[in-house]
Length: 398
Image (cartoon, rainbow, N blue to C red; front, top):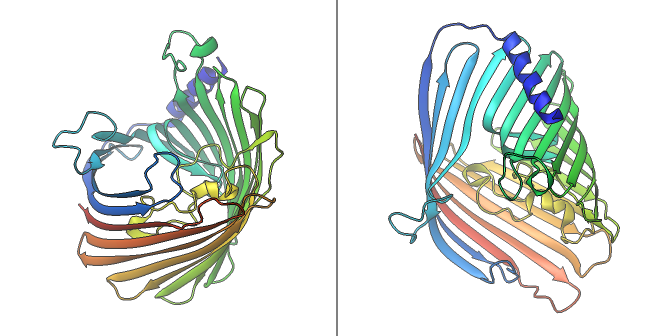
């Protein structure tokens, strides 16, 4: 199979480049996190529960090895991640232990090869971002870097039959390539990713062009654009064209801010709008920052912000953000956003407001709090009440 040949080729390239040396270092660390969360969502159609209030926790532990100058490894897991009240021994499964990193990294000369369970993102996170099982191979030839990607999404289809790749037992795989360039004036690159479910012929393909350019000591401009295509194997085509640009500013040692403009084209009625190949919340213009980032909130739906209606009508949006280091121990973040579909739709617009605070209580201990508000405007009698989410968090790093 072509995919097997690609994997074997990458591994043989790695073996060619690597030479052994001796040395060994081991380190361990992690984080404990406790939260009190309250969410009032008057349009929760998934669970039927409009308001949720609960406590939850997570114990994250990471073990890292530097085997020698060429080889390193990491094992990281989230232990006892569940809502309080599930009992002293919750049912075994994803709520009790989730290993999200289990990889080895081999580097020699221009090659860096990472094999195993890992995480990654391309195109500023708007083309593809995921925690995955697979292989990444980076070839650095300054100022150009070539990155290759293989991801095993599923083996043996829905039936789990790994003995054949035929029919319903075919696999789902992701492939990608990225060509990056960096110099003193800017960095950027062109990226490609595609994923195919062999059992259903569901195929998603995307291309991304991104750039990051420091304009001065104060301002940095960044942006990315993506084009998506494919089909679901049942007659529905995927389509999507989107852009975002951000201007970030460092006004002083204590104040930072920025503005992000987001746009996506609407798709035809017989198409499904695609906003990413895989979305692991790397691009999050409307979410908490600081210690609460990549956790609670997600008020803008991450790359879902490119389809604010959820019905393929695209979006035009703007988000402003501000960060204030009040003291060495206290940092404030705030975001204000407005988004509306590009075509006439029952949803006219959404207004977003997000604010959170970190307090470094003592070394390794942080207290955080955040509030998010999303106010929609509908044409019909759909409930216009705002979604309100709030969280308080204690985090301890070790």
